[in-house]
Length: 240
Image (cartoon, rainbow, N blue to C red; front, side):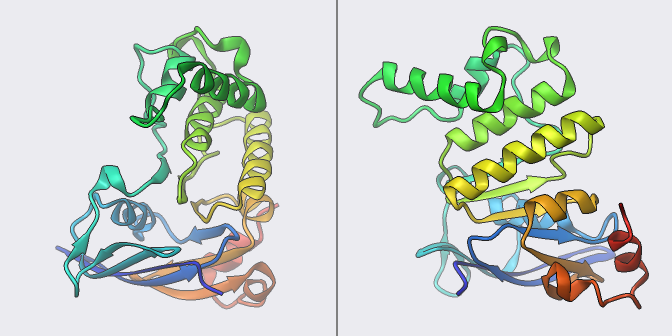
C-alpha cells in the first residue's frame, strides 16, 4: 500500500521533468544518469522548485495540491533533507548543529532536549566531538553529525542526496550501517538519490529509474536485475 505519492511537472529551457512516483515505508532508491534531475525531484518535494500540476502527499498529509490550491510552506513540511553539502553551520559546535534545527516552540524542558541530543550523538558515534567545530572533524564525522541532526528531527519523510559519495570506504560503511539501523527502527519513508549500488543493496528495498525526464521503471532490485538491455542499468547493477 502506498503511503506517499509525488506527481508534478517542471519545465525549463532544454530540461523537463514529468514525475509520478509513489512508495511505502520501505526506502526507495532513485537512480539515473548525471543531470537527469534526481536532486531536482528532492528539491521539488521540499518546495524549493516551482512546479506545475503538482500533488505531494506524505501519509494523510497533503503538502501540495495544485488543483485545490494547497501549498504548505517549506519550513512547515516536516521533511528531513540531507544534501551533498551537508548544510552544517561552520561557527557552531557539533552539539549546537544537531540541536539547532530541532528546537521546538512547544518544548517544556531544556534538559529533555539536551538528553535527546546526547543520545543521538552517542548512537551515531560523535558524542566525543560534542564541542568541536565542523572544520575540526573528518568528512565521515561531519556526515555523522548531519545524520544525527536529521534523525533527531523525527520527520515525516527523509530525503537523502548521495549520502556516501564524498566519504572514504570505511566512513561509507559506517554511515550505511547508521542509516540502515535508524531508518528501519523509525520506519520513516525515505527517498535516496545515489550512484553507488552498495547504497542500494544495504539501504533500499525498491528502486526507481529516472530517464529522459520520467520514471521509466520502478520495482524491487530483483525486478531490475533482468533489465540488462539498458546501458545505464547494466553498468549500475554490475557494480561490486
